[in-house]
Length: 202
Image 1 (cartoon, one colour):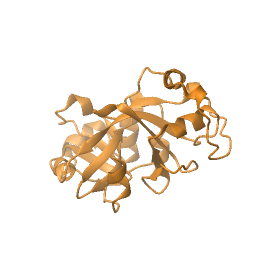
Image 2 (cartoon, rainbow, N blue to C red; image 1 turned 60 degrees about the vertical axis):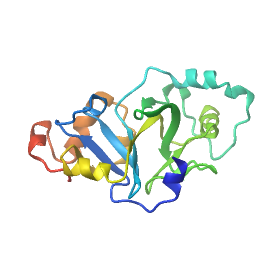
Image 3 (cartoon, rainbow, N blue to C red; image 1 turned 90 degrees about the vertical axis):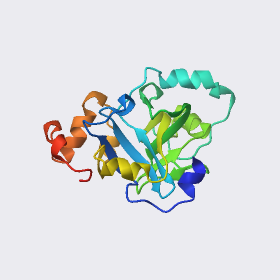
């Protein structure tokens, strides 16, 4: 995944939301809101943003035994409460792997910019930084991701499977998951009842 994100030019859907249309025939993505991190001729990668997980961040840290490893001081203290740091299902691909989508105030050698204001880090360094209060100001822990092969996402958008629009950071990090789908549509000036008449782009 790292190679796909770093060795690319930005695609037209980078930094966009994908909103599942009512005709979505895959229950894993029903009423989903996805943030697209990478879109190119080679395919696309994104993260579902409205699938919370019962696992607590403090439990994850305990399971990883991070206490035995030093924490890099990558930035100023954020005073982030690790008990409140959200964990979500990012998608069905590689669901055992964790990624942190976060604000650009945290950077490490493995951090990859994915939009003008957001970055992605997939190493334990950021988990230790969050634990010690030196992580990003805003972030989400995502387990797994959603992926598309070459031309697949373009075909799905053309087939009216997804609606797309530029993402807003406040909606990316909004933790009211049950209403996020409708709020993203509302930002676009659309109600769910209107979706059956919409084309694939906004």
